[in-house]
Amino acid sequence: MGHGGDVIAELTTDHREVVELFEQFHDAPPGGEDRKRLVDALTIELVRHSVAEEQYLYPAVREHLEGGDALADKELADHARVEQLLNDLQQRDADDLDFDRLVVKLRTEVTAHVDDEENTLFPRLREGVHPYVLEELGNKVRQAKKNAPTRPHPGAPSTPPANKLLAPGLGLVDRVRDYVSAW
Image (spheres, rainbow, N blue to C red):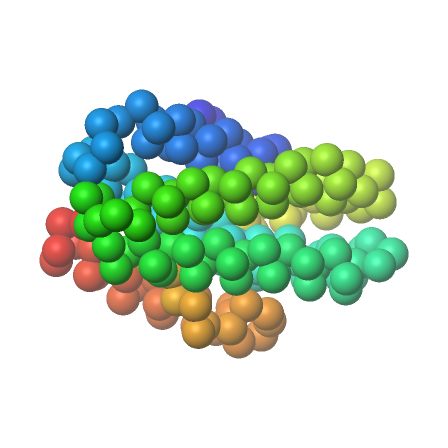
């Protein structure tokens, strides 16, 4: 899928890509390496997406929307649950008895989060934030995803300024590990 546009278009494209990966996982044979490869791809996409939202989207939600602190805090709690599930999945092989159960739980969490963003948060952003700001946020999110980690780091900070300082370094370390391990 093509990326570009404002932050809402960018993140919605990410959502569609993740849904497609979940569908591919569902269609893959249980216990096979394809399922592990798809979980690795899901992990990369979800971590990059989450880091970019935490760096730029949620601070903008806090700044521009009435009740933005509560909205951002709820979204960050969603991210923490997803990141823990991703971390648990990274510790298991595809033929592990808990592997498929964890993926179902992950899909449930991610689907609820996507629905909440697309049906509640994004319409409020579209209504309450100037289109220029949304466009700039889209550019920042795209850039953040290029430097973001590719593996879950549940203990890493999820709010500015610490997340903006640490994410690029974690991302570099992850990309080196990915290259060396051919992940």
